[in-house]
Length: 313
Image 1: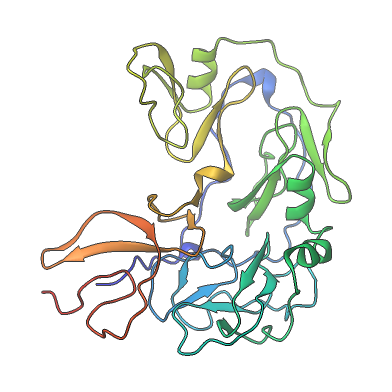
Image 2 (image 1 turned 180 degrees about the vertical axis):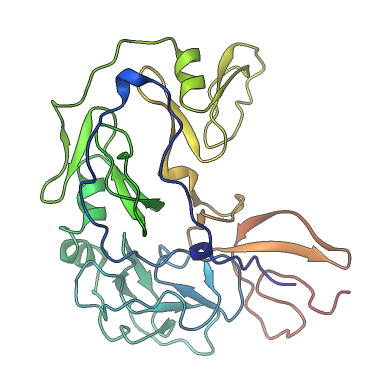
């Protein structure tokens, strides 16, 4: 058995939080119709290619066409039509090219690019960033927002909340933070129209935003419980979320979905720094949780890129 291979596009995620603080909910209309949705990062290792949604070579794609977008490197905001090949048969002596994933720039080493857009791209990260400076993801991050690349929202968040609307096809969105909204031309801005609620205790804020108030010493971070040996009460927001005291309570954070080598992985998180999401298997089958690991590139046909013995029963 090889790496985890769940397609992230097959799993719809809710765009709304169950937050019951009436004074903090801004009643606004749907601000935009989402444009083309960037390809979702996929997990696992099958054919040895990484799709354009990865940053520098993150997650393995399920087939050679996965993640190929309509843009051949023209500098638009659509993802470049490229894929990263893990363990290429041959490499060349040259500088990497930088491409756009739909939400960020990432490099592909010389000889490791697959797709119609491989002849394009940029010569440096700065050049790529400049070419995509007006894209929604760049505007969001550049003005202090969190670009929710993993989300399927109906529009950009307003006043620190998802907009109360339904849509047939959701997509990534920008969360500018409490009392801020997103403008397609300028990015995040302080929104004077946002309601200012009365302060509430952290325990009430925790529960109202979907968390549980427990004796765990400090607020959880991306689902991780504080290691400090104390029993002070704090908020357990659960996986993918952090706690904003005195503001919004439990909210999703991008760092919870961008996994580093050795960290756990799976939908909708994506592996970073050239790693892929791997199950770890033996004769008794897979065990534990998948983690982000560097691919194993060798000539042994009995071992996959995650280091699993393919001949094991």
